[in-house]
Image (cartoon, rainbow, N blue to C red):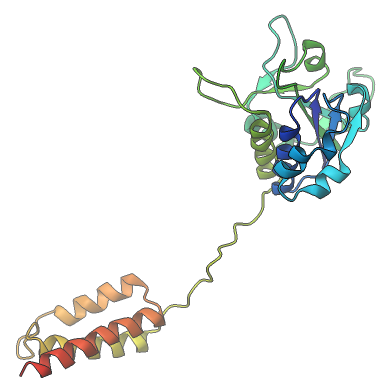
Length: 255
């Protein structure tokens, strides 16, 4: 689904750069600025520095004079503000609303019931000015007011931080990205490797006097179970055999 992030009357260039970085991290790249404080905000040094490599998002970012221009082509609009006191769209958390949007046919009810409903082909997220937030008349244009669940005693979020949270929740709702581990998964040692290590360890335990071969009881079977539960890797088997070898050599040297 086409996704657009719309920032209204931004005043701090750093927030624009940080917003671009937040979008790129979440795999989005469409940002529109409505009447920002600085006409050249996309070229300001602070903007570029805070973008931290998301220059391609800045290059695609458009600046428009009014909100109507920014909304062109958007079929479902989300405000990031509390619902005004008198009336307005419903207020939901991002996760709750995204489940509603994606958990049912992507259809936006038409105002006139005689007309067929139109599918939601694009979604826009509105963010207000750092200084004044969102105007009521802008919220009224939206289908929902998204409210990020925060500490009731302190809910103030930086613009870029709020955008990052909404972008993350939306990406998660769309399926997210796989989590790639920087460390390759190791293969597990097979039964033969574990058995060979246990034979080596048994000899070492006898050498140091911990195991009496005449009365072994259930020590080795219990160690066998322990190492099976441990899911040892071949590298770990090698370490344990090295320990057993050192135990044997030390015990023999003391005789």
